[in-house]
Length: 289
Image (tube, rainbow, N blue to C red; front, top):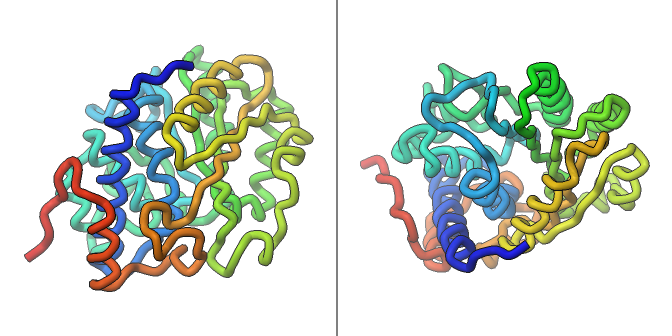
């Protein structure tokens, strides 16, 4: 697959701004999950600005005739909110309300007051794949030719419901579904190897009847290529999963690869250092006075 360099440059520019948004959101309230959000910035940017066929306005919670996406590891909401705002679902200025009282942008996403872009609540881990299976089957019944996408954390794979859904998808030949696993090797209490070794994920997913691809989730070209190949592998009576290797805290040197930053916000000095390494590309949203 040939990828235009101009497109790559544009997506990389958006990714940098998304990382700035993430850092500023969690810092403003001293709360949130920057590590996984930063690591998945390329994925969300690629998805919403290049891959998905979606309609921000008017937003349809049913999503008929559109590709739909479900974030299963909902704690990385900052990256999703940033991309939703930057792609037109709600005003960029609303990022300023992240995790504040009465905000629509809560720490874990929810379709609160009809928040555009959000179709399910995803605070409890493990549920997203089950929902995606249901929606993918519904699209088949409706003769809707669009796709269903999901994102999961590797630590989330410790939830048994994931594997029940994986069996279900394979058994029912749900082949309009592309799941992605963020394989950063980190979770809140340490590395996944220390907490609960996941073994060989490719072998596991293949044993459950899925078509498996692997990619570097922090390399935009590799990511776009894999997403395209994965899409071409659908409609063949098997669900598809992408094992996406990322670095927790990507883009901020002192955060990279450290599970500490799973759910810790940077202080004032740390924010300053981080933002200096991430030049503004699309314009920051205004801060509260």
